[in-house]
Length: 234
Image (cartoon, rainbow, N blue to C red; front, side, top):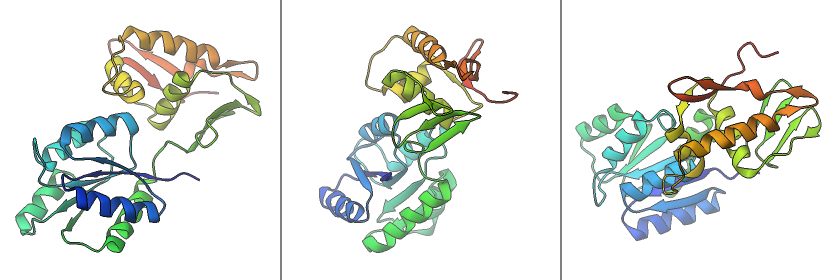
C-alpha cells in the first residue's frame, strides 16, 4: 500500500521529531528539511504528496518557498500547510493569498494536524508515485513498478519508467529538457540536456509493443521539449 510522503520543513529539531513520530504512527512517510534550499531540493527529487511548511526559516521565510512552488508548473498543485507561531489575521491572509491550502498555529495538537493532512491529500487525489495509470491497453502500475500492454510486460529501464510515470502523471503539458531533468533525475544531479533525447528514444522504442504502438504518445514540441498526449489516440 502506498504511504503518502509528507515533507516537514521546520528549523526546530524538536518539532520535526514530534511531527515525524506522529506522521509515521499515522502511516505516512516523513522526509525533513530545516531550510528552504534543502526543502526545494527534496520537492524536486522526491515529489512529496504534501508539505508542512514553517513560516520562519533560516536563509529565507517559508513564504519564499511557497511562492516558488506556486510558480512552478509541476509544483503549483502541491498541497501546503503553513505551520507558524504568527497568529495575526493579516499573516494568515498573506499565506493563503500566496497559495497555502491550510494554516495551523503553534502549538497545535498532532491529531488535528494529521486530520488536516489527510483531508488535503484526499482533496488533491494523493500523489502519482504508486498510482495505476492507463491509456487504452497501456498500463503503468506504480505499486509493482511494471508497464504492461494488455497483459504483456513491457521491458524498459528504470529511467525510462520514471520518465513515463512523470509524463502520464502530467499529460498534455509541454516540458523543457531542463524541467524533465529536474523532475526525473533530480535537482542535484548533473546530466547534459541531450541525455533526455537518448532516453526519449529508448522510451519510444520500448512502447512499440507487438500488442500496440504507443510511441506516438510521447510528442516532440518544437522549440520546447516533449509532451505526453493521448488526444486522438486510437
